[in-house]
Image (cartoon, rainbow, N blue to C red; front, side, top):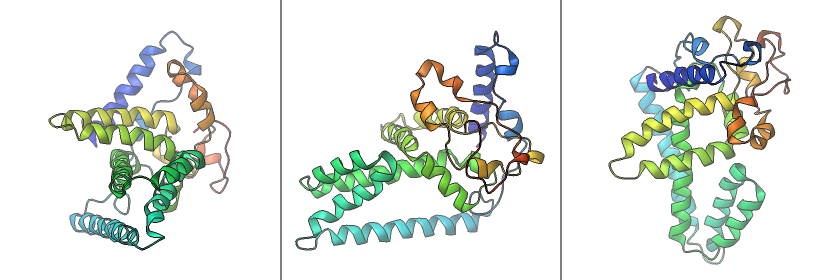
Length: 253
């Protein structure tokens, strides 16, 4: 968690140095100074209880294992079995990259050997778990409910899939895994500054988590070149003035 915060401080420092000749009023707010004021919390997102952490891990592991066994077993059914793994791949991939690529995967999956679809599904879910682990320091501080956190991930699922799968593949390279994980932590801190707003001080954080569920500047982010990613931010209004039930907010996320 410290590595994430240290990387976030470095991202802020680099941003200021990069824009030292710009008008300070046009610069985005910093992430590190306010985020470091938030205390980590116990519960579903982060816990300091070893017993609770172990039980939550075992529950998630058992649930995923049972689903995997059920899907794999169904793939051996006569006639319909050949469609089970392609359908499972379509269902999981559709949310991440959209209907078109997911349909192509379904179509090709019907003719691919079963082991290749199993590898694909394993890689997808492993990369998703990696992303949740890398983002844990952020969610341990910002007070998201389970439903808000689910919406947060769903809104950014395509980007997170592309980000996570690259690092997951590199982490499997012998000897380089530890080094790659450190790079992944630093890159995640940078990613947070592009897909979320700078957090307000804890005393003004009412409504902030709710406002971050939807990635409202998604199209703007995708349209920007790599050299202009810093232009993604617009000055948002104070979050305490926002209606927590509102689904839209001026400015980018």
